[in-house]
Amino acid sequence: MPRARLTPESVTEAGAALVDEIGFDHLSMGLLAERLGVRAPSLYKHVSSQADLAHRIAVLALTELGDVIRDATQGRAGSDALAAGAQAMRTWVQEHLGRYAAGNAARPTGPDDPLLPSWSAMLRGYQLDPGQEIHALRLLRSVLHGFVTLEVAGGFQIDTPVNDSFTWMIDFIDRGLQAITAAPQSPPAPALS
Image (cartoon, one colour):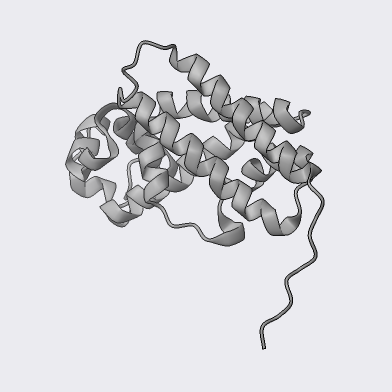
């Protein structure tokens, strides 16, 4: 019978805390069991495998990050939502690098991606054409991911404040999104026969 103090949720939470400390690539059932004060076979009563644990940590991470972005953007629109959401993501990743790596290893698709509603909320005030929104979402996620992962890896060594670069980047994205929505929409291209 499983120990009363362990549940799939508590094992997942402990695994998430562990990967934040040691890195997602170093996760093992043995290390987690040691952390929880149990033997490794006891964990398999709560998660079916290390892959299952990694997936659970990924889902937890993506849900947490989505919630953080949602909370930061609530009641905001346009550049205010963009800046608040981007900074919320940046701070969360800095504090939860292992979880973030786990989340990036997951393969959510389409509407089941827990981040999609929060990312969309960051862009809602720009009133993008639905055909352009996916491109804007991919741009935003790629740019923020690249910046934050370079930052936490110590990749910015030039003697200019990183916060200034982050603000400049968000302002640049904001101006680009505003320019897209201000530009007249061109008619769809004729279909090729």
